[in-house]
Length: 256
Length: 332
Ligand SMILES: Nc1ncnc2c1ncn2[C@@H]1O[C@H](COP(=O)(O)OP(=O)(O)OP(=O)(O)O)[C@@H](O)[C@H]1O
Ligand SMILES: [Mg+2]
Image (cartoon, rainbow over all chains, first blue to last red):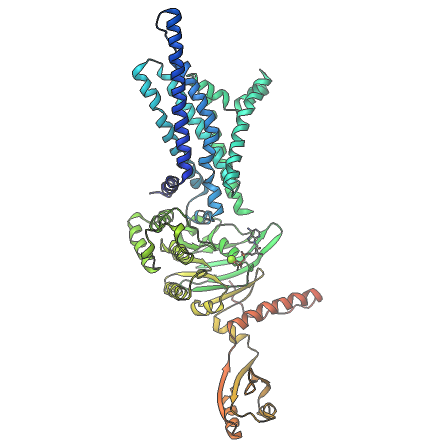
């Protein structure tokens, strides 16, 4: 076991006994299941209507009718749920003074931050993986394009990772977990809202830059099945940047 | 083994410690003594690499704190002021976690865990969740955490705080048992603790080192005269005047009871025989004759108060530079 693996294992162990973990997991899975149910029922009704009016079976586009709305709704749910996973990561260590143990152990701050980030990422990807049940089950009863589903899941994974890194940063900024949760919620919302600002500015250079900074259009492209390098680069660089700032914050606490 | 060189730490504008210098030899137990807010915790945090000094450097086992912080961290076991415990973990889970975190080879982890659990009497609580333990047991788990990777250097910030008297004795024995093979710095307010377990004490007050020596040397060095307590059965009327006629006696003062007198005489003389002879000749019924030595408590008060006086003196006349009470401080 390297110290990083040790730290990841410890974080996961602490999550398993934490009620927050179960609440977040249950809410996430319930919402995703409920959304799938809603969308499938909706698609079914449309098919029925089509049948009554045209007297033939409709070639419904399930990707558009079911999966795209699910992906978009889940992305919004993540804004509220993921800060609850990340809030305790550093805030609690500072509050309980266990940071003193970590910082006097022979591991670097970057290792501490990557371990914490990895632990919540593992939990999130696990939950996301469970929602894969919906397309899996639907694939037996209908036909749809698989590629947009895959890029959609990639989008959710990348967007989740980015939100989690925002949460890690927020957690380093305060000793109070609730404050950390609201702070990361705030950071994520800002990244969402600037997308609107960007599209208001239209086709100007500034507009393009601001739109690029927001995750909204990157996510949209992935959900529509477009796999482009710039979107992947956006998420990865955003995540790394947030974790880097978190590193600076933790380091600066030592110097205060 | 540990060399602290001219370290200064500022928190914003607040000067927590200033120009602190001391050395600890391999295998030595150094007591770090001082009133609240003296800067003990601050100094220890700098040595362990938890935070950097504003000025000055620290070397541990020949490694510089700025150049090889990880090498230093591998060699130090640290018990912070409040034990860094994860409430959700059981004692064994926690100790395994710390052992791995400190890069203890996996093959040694089970052995070391068994050893520290035995050493600190944690056997009965090994499978309990730390959040459910009493304060004393948490303190022990904190100590176990510092020892788990068998580090050559131990930094213990108030290791016996919150323990009951029997546990205190046990833990002191554990620390005493580390002497020789381990280099230990421990901080405490309890002076008898420093006398009991430390080879040397450093007294720090308001961020400055005011004295550094063995406990015995410190108390004898600060004595300005020898004092003896004399108790007789029937002290006559002018008993104290009569006592002061003994050659060499400087002063005789009333002790805590009318039968007791405190006789003060010059340092380096031994008047005990003369006094005994005199009392027997007077036929007043000698009950007790015992030398009074300055306790570390007295030393401590004397040093910290002298320091205060010095500060006042310096305020009044900046030109006069009063010498510190302890002249031959061990320097680097
Ligand atoms: N994080 C901090 N920010 C600002 N000032 C601090 C901080 N930590 C300590 N100080 C100040 O530095 C000085 C030294 O504190 P330190 O904790 O080292 O004392 P101490 O000798 O350990 O005291 P105690 O016996 O109470 O534990 C105190 O005046 C304290 O107020
Ligand atoms: Mg302290």
